Structures are given as C-alpha cells and as structure tokens.
Image (cartoon, rainbow over the protein chains, first blue to last red):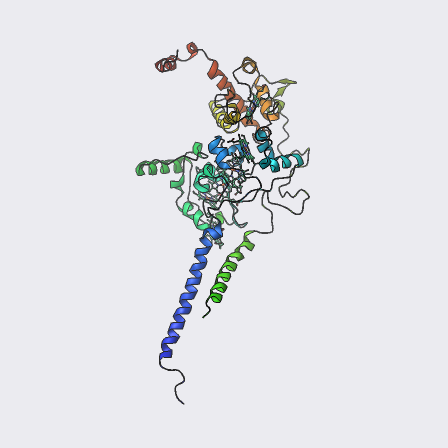
Length: 219
Length: 193
C-alpha cells in the first residue's frame, strides 16, 4: 500500500497543533483584554439618569461639599444616594418651575423614590465599606476621580479586583489628611521625599495596614 | 473563502463568556436602595413603621434631644463645649449650612446668590440674643422656608453647629480692645483699627 499521507503532512500536523495552541492563547488573552476594557467595565462612560443631575454644577459651581448629600459616608459602609427631600431643601425655590426637575417634584409629592441608575456596583460577593477608607485617609477623588468635573456621573476606575489590590498592597502612597477627604483639588507634595514622608507619617498616625487576604473582601 | 462567520461566532462566544459573570454578580438578595418587586412601594430598604423606637434611641433626655427645658428653648448646652466640639461644628456648618448662610453666617451663600430666599444674618440682635435651644430647633425642625436637617445631622452634631454659630457671632461682635494684646498688634499691622 502506498503512503496515504505525503511526508509534508508531518509539518502540517505540527502547524495545526501550533495554530490551535496559539488560537486558544489568543482567545484567552482576548477574553482577558475585553473583560478589562471599558466596553465591559463601563469605565469612563457617562450614565444617563432620570434627572440630569450635574455634580459639576453642584460641587464646583456652588461649592457644596460631597457630604451635604452623601452624608453617611463617614460613618457607614454605604455612602447613600440622597433622598428627594435633600434636593427639595434648595429646589423648593430654585428652578422650581423647570421641567427638568419635574421628576424630583413628583417624587416629593407622591413619596415615590426617584429611579437613579447605579453607576458603581460591585458584585454581590464582594464586601466594600466606605467609612473605613474615608477614616483611614483615602479621598473620594482617589477612587471616584474628578467628580467635580462630571456633568453626568461615570466610573473613573474599573472597580475590578486588580484595582483594589494595587492599592491594598501599598496603601500608604494614596493617603491624605482626613480633613482633605472631599477636597477634589488636593495634591500630594510635589517633592518625592516630602511625599514619602507624608505617606509614612499618615500611615502611622491612622494605623493603616496592608490588607490583602481574601477574606477581607470575600466574606 | 468566508472567514466572517467563524470570526463572528468567536466574537459572540467572547461576549457570551463575559455575560456569564453577571449571573454571579447580582445575587438574589437585595442591596441597600435596590429595587424590590415584593413591596408595593418598590423599596428594598424599608422605612421604619411610624412611631418605631429603635433600641437605644428612646431619647428621654429632653434637653439633649428637643432643645427644650420645661417648655422653654434651652439657654444652656446639654454638654460641655470644648475646642473639639467647636471644631467639629465648623466642619458640619461648612458642609450643611454654608451654601445658604455663607462662611460668615451673614446670609450670602452661593445658593442665595442664585436666587434662594436670603436668610437673616446671624449677627442681628435678635439672633445674638436667641438661646442655644432656638438654634437647635431650627436645625432639627426647620424654620419658615428652611427645611429641617433632622435626617442628615445627628443630635450631637446639631449642638456642635450651635456652638460654632456662637463662635461666629462672637467673632463679628467682639470689640478690638477685648482681644489678647498679641492679636490686637497683629490686626493693627494689617491695618484694622
């Protein structure tokens, strides 16, 4: 019987194996890349809301502190989305005819909550707590970016595990004095030595540790 | 050769694989403020039944919690006013009151400049002479067109704000001669008579 496969088939077989291996590797990395891409994480994408609430106007424009509305952020794990009454302390008089704010007035009249769309939402299997971060000197801007420049809210970071860990391995350099937590313009000292000195000093003063065991966030 | 179909299939498989995570992302339990289909008002965070008294929240101390003593606005603070209290009051004042009342309490806040009714200055005689209990009640229950802040500011912080308002009032009404000598010299150097 003559040889069914020509000799070059050996090469072909190897080539096929190589292509399959490369394809699998490529597919896997494509999966990893897309899962980190803004398409998946929605990082940097403004999210539409039932009322076009502008953080830019209310914080930069009017100088209102974050805690005026997110008032439980220092004492609770939850930063809280303000109830309608909070808007009405001002909008009972300001822009009180504007059609744009009709959903707010309707919510106040009928006692039905405004249907805000969540922008940041960790999976249910992750535990997160605002108060510990805020009280250990991590500022809003470190995690949420320049909120004071957002006409509509977007996510400034991926909120993926790698992002949490990047800081948890070495939190010191991300600390600021507690009284600057909501300051959107705070900058660490420009000089590298002074910056390191401040980081070390704050870490000691607030007793900040590097917490990386799985049970910190998956409990 | 038609390569678009396998390519499209691979693309779809990729998207599907990413979609899988969402199942585990959103478990069957409800997070705070999440929407519920179970309750009629759609709220997962249940408002307490009217009249509920939570454990440890009986609030029997009339002076501390109502700002009244024997039916009259309290003329004293329910706890000692220390430097920490005043400083705490300053941060809370700047967060909650400054947008309308202004940093000095003169009633020229940013929101007022956009058309909100102007509140009275804290430095008029009537408010200088008003007892602490009056201010406590304005914060807790609102006053005229000003809404109450009872849900946003807790009891101790309300008193801390009152203490800071007192400090503001002093700061605007103390005659130069009553200040310590060093401070007077500093002010004179700045050209203040």
